[in-house]
Length: 192
Length: 192
Image 1: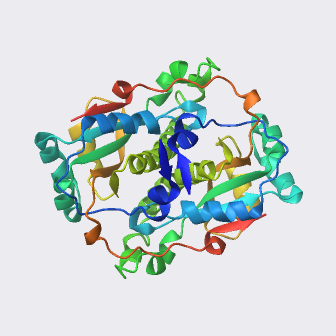
Image 2: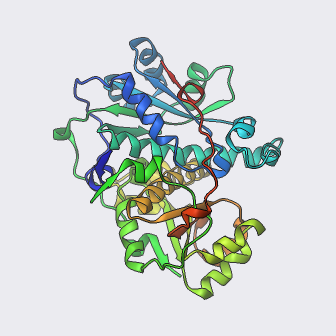
């Protein structure tokens, strides 16, 4: 599918005000089928996603959000909860067939499990945002919420913990603030 | 710039064998100027990058890598060290002018600083990989290295810690393994 880098980066903005235009479930499937190809270490793919779009599920999510995030979460056609499975390594025999011993790199090593799940599910969160934009969706990522409460509402009985939350829909561009500045190359980067 | 989603996701592969084709510094600048637009919480933009491409700097980096990552790191035209600045909040008056108090959300709150820096620099790592691919580069991300040693070699005297490392160049597609499987939508996602 042809797109432009401007659509993904230069002209894309975080949205907080949503047009009354639904996001079909088919598009959520296409979003996952694109983002799943982004690389993770040992292909461990720890991200798990709940796409919250029914009124019942939204009513469970909204009170978990920080006060300033509630109204916009309620108004978004879809809000995705991006979690990380802390037992991701149990799927390595399926995901990393090159090395049947890959599971043992993690099992019992809680610090490595935690950092691998967090780093890689966040990388996948980056792929998620870019893939959504490639499909013409706008994103509203948020990290202001009561994580243990979201875990209890949406991941109970699993080994998944919430990483961040991201609304999806069609943003109202007339409601955007001016874009905030970014660091210059020299502030953020160095050639060595 | 026109690109395709296949170039970014479906057809893109992690590379370990590099063609003898240099990556001009100009392309590294363009890569940062694209990835910098990806969203981070409160625009905190904690990622810091060292582009290691001189023989002297490569000679310092290679011994920090896990044994299995050394030869391919030495052979890559560029290996980027993606770090996270644990004092990212000091730049919030510049980066988040909407709220002059944003710095105080973090200052002194080490757990929030750590998770915000790690999550958002990893998101930026995802943008980095996708932006590199958009520019025609191949990526070889790696997390197998001695992090305290990389920190000491490349971030000494700063508040930056290494998150992950990613080689950049033009991969030899004839040397690729078959692509590993991904989780299906139903294994990774749920509609609620």
